[in-house]
Length: 219
Image (cartoon, rainbow, N blue to C red; front, side, top):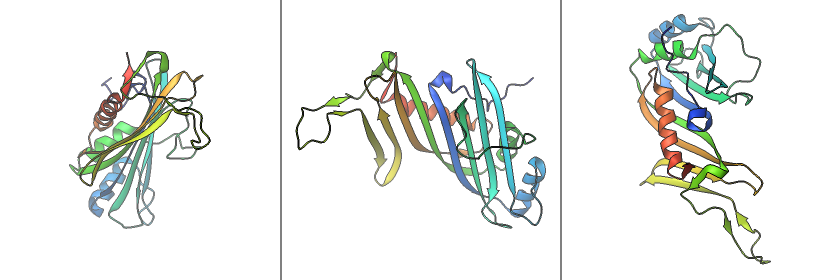
C-alpha cells in the first residue's frame, strides 16, 4: 500500500496539535468538479465537505480532521481548515459526532493539489517538551524579590513576536508552567505560503518545529 504523506508523526516532533486554515477562491465549474470528486451537499445548497483520517504513529493514536465550505451558496470563496491532534485531545474545528463515511485527508488534498493555486495558510501549533530534558534558549523562569508594588514572584512564560517591517513572521508563547509541572509548552503561530499538495501538512509541521526549536528543545 502506498505511503500516505498526510499521516504526520506529531509525537516525533514533540507536537500535539497542528491547525491550518485559509480562504481559497475556486471557479464555480472547478468547485463543482471538486465537490463531485469528494462529495457534494447538493447543487442548491452551500457546499460543504468534511474529511478525516485516523492512524497510529510513534505508538500513539493520531487524527486529522477538516472541512471545505463555501462562504455562501454559489460563492467562489471557500474556507479550508485542517487540524491534526493526538488522542485523547478533542478536535477544535468540528464538533462531535462526525460522520464516519467521509473522505480521507489525502484524497481531499490530492484533489485540491490539482488546482495549482498559491495560498497563504494561517498555521497554529503546540509543542510539549519534557522539562528535565529541555534546554531553553530563553532564561525562564524569571524571579523577582517580594514587593507590594510587584504583583508577581515569577515569570514562567513569555510571548515573543517576530516581524519584518509591518509583516508578521511568527509569534511564540513559551510556558514553563509551575515548578511541579513536568512539561514546557510552546505555542507557535505563523503564516505559510505555497500550493495545496499532499506533503503540505508535513512542510508546515517542519516549519513550525524549526521556529519552536529557536526558543528551546529537548537534548
